[in-house]
Length: 94
Image (cartoon, rainbow, N blue to C red; front, side, top):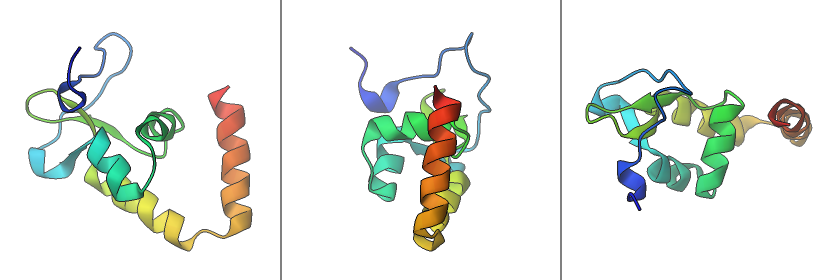
C-alpha cells in the first residue's frame, strides 16, 4: 500500500496541473488546515471547491490558493450559504 503522502492522481481519469512545490499541499495537510477528515478533500475536489495539483514529484495534492479560498469561504459563509452549497454539492456529486 502506498503511503498517503506519496499517492498520485490517475493519469487517465483526471488532468492535473503540476505546480511548484511552494504552491502545493498534500491532501492530508489540506484536511488538517481545513479541520476536516481526509475523505472530504476528495469530495471538495470532485465538486470543484479545491483545485487538484501535483507537485514536482507527481504526488497528489491541492493548490494552496484553493485551500486558502475554501478556508476564507468557510469563515465568512452564512448558515444559509453553507446549506445551499451542501444541497448543490449533494446533487452534483450524485
